[in-house]
Length: 365
Ligand SMILES: *Cc1c(COP(=O)(O)O)cnc(C)c1O
Image (cartoon, rainbow, N blue to C red):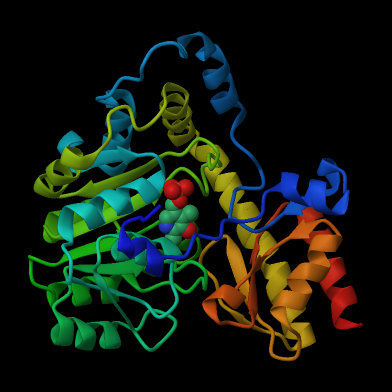
């Protein structure tokens, strides 16, 4: 069968390997497989979230509340933004897709960092946009500005903290950059890991409320998949000036987020003590990886997210990822980004102890 020719230049997104496939392939018991590959919260969710979902199991036959007003009201209070400045998606991924479709036409240009979240490119190519990347892998706003002036992109993506590298822009630099951008250019700021950055360094924390108030061309994205521990529930949100949100709503499929997911997200947002505990735990455990790298002389990128990227030099990332997999440990090999690097999601204390032990062993081979 012939398909839309844009599919010829698309590659299928390589998601983190599921635990089930390691069980099947290597015969390791599911309980012994450790997945540190998709930046999920290793602590799960707050107990209240499970209770809330359990209590709502008899609502499955009914369509969700398509206005999503309970969750939107909660987000509106949390971020101090208006109801009309919010959209909820099946993951923030869906909002990226809606935004690209709402803004881009064939031949438009989309600007992004040299190495960043793979879905920006996939959604952009699907609408036949031209991708322009900075030469620098990490976000370099000087280079972004040059390319903006040269190419007049329809969309600029800033991923801060950046996945899969972990670097994070200073809030002050983001604002100075935005002042140079004309109001017709949509700037999508992906804040999937902003909670981690804000915990580590206040100077890198972005306020969606202030950004949106000052810049009517900014779309800020957040997700419940990372710090809130709800990757399996698929809930993300966008915050922007109301006309942007209204445009996205025209393309949003009805009932795009399930009843149970909406409830889980609303409850998770209320459990800020749990969030703080997880942030502290992650920051603490990150230090163990940094120390390990310093001791072994392994280069790494100072991370403001819940993962750390190791640049391997003397070892091969594909070999290492494969070796770990056989031992039941899933990490993210960045060879598909043409990097000899691995990205490790910060796990629980015992998960990290196991992985650090294996890394130690691999380096002594
Ligand atoms: C995880 C992630 C997302 C969103 O994930 P969803 O599960 O779709 O909400 C968006 N951007 C980046 C950079 C991510 O790492």
